[in-house]
Amino acid sequence: MGALPSDQQGVASAMNDATREVGAALGIAVMGAAYGSAYRAGLPAVPAGTPAEIVEAVQGSAAAGLMVADRIGGPVGDQIAEAVRAAFIDGLSSSSLVIAAILGLAAIAVA
Image 1: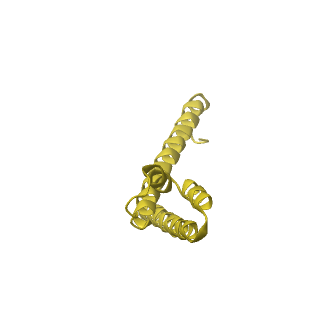
Image 2 (image 1 turned 90 degrees about the vertical axis):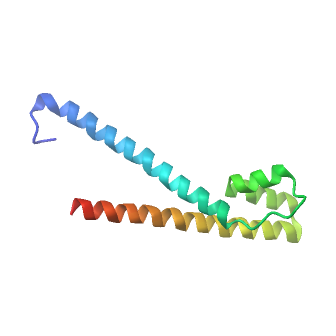
């Protein structure tokens, strides 16, 4: 911004802020989509007869899945908790790889 005349520096600053905000929003959306897809794909098949509320909670988020597992307790709760933890790590790994690939492409484009 130092290369611009002083009467244009405000516009340049606003443009800089706007592009940063858009980039952050897009990054969060891409990471969330990659995480959610991998998380749900990493969960094991639901046994027949499982109440829909439990299925939705476990598939909706890892935190809700762990709460369900804690409430169920016992060996079944432990199995659910382990599956949720493994799916969480799968989702986190997938979203990290997607962002790493995007950053790599961006680095190549900048170079």
